[in-house]
Image (cartoon, rainbow, N blue to C red):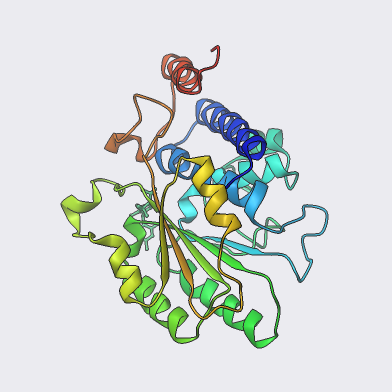
Length: 283
Ligand SMILES: Cc1ncc(C[n+]2csc(CCOP(=O)(O)OP(=O)(O)O)c2C)c(N)n1
């Protein structure tokens, strides 16, 4: 049973993070992948602020858990979750995001931004890299976990399933895939383009331990992260997180056009009002 105070702390952080995302989306002149950022906000707060063993003051600690953002287009969401944990400076993210020579690119680059474990953005590659890292940890008898966040649309890529098959073959109990199952891709709803259901069963068929949760229920997020099987177990875990793209901003929720976009002044104010209403707060 998740601790109530901890769940409340994380819920407050998720509200703060959504406001920070909206703020960035209002300030940045180009397009921000805001829909898929808002769908994984609660999950990233749960991971970086509760579930993962990471330390902004010791980013090279060999015992740290590793995180790979396979849906690399959601980089700014990861930057902000990490900034709120003390890794980066939020104001600097806002000031430089997406600009030439900024460390905070639209897709993450581990060379430019120490603390990020893996460069990504070309979908379908992250899980294979996570498998490699998890094999390495196992071979070297290290006890940390490797977490990998994927988009559900991304799992149309065949390479994801090759990696999934390898993970169970190598019995990678230290590997956790988190799938942001928001049922949307870039230009369509998933089931319109690709028959994904029964989705969780597909991961089961590949030999994974599968847990389905509501990816916006902080209680469920804490619970699943607190109760992961030991790293020495014989099966990788897939957390299929049912989410809503654009979560928290009424006019963005489940709207295809908000895969990516920017906010004019009117939308910006409305987004903050929606968020406040949905969190039961004063705007
Ligand atoms: C290999 C590759 N093909 C296409 C793209 C362009 N692209 C960026 S986001 C996206 C949709 C991804 O959908 P999903 O994984 O469900 O992400 P989410 O809806 O959570 O943002 C696509 C096709 C890409 N980044 N990489």
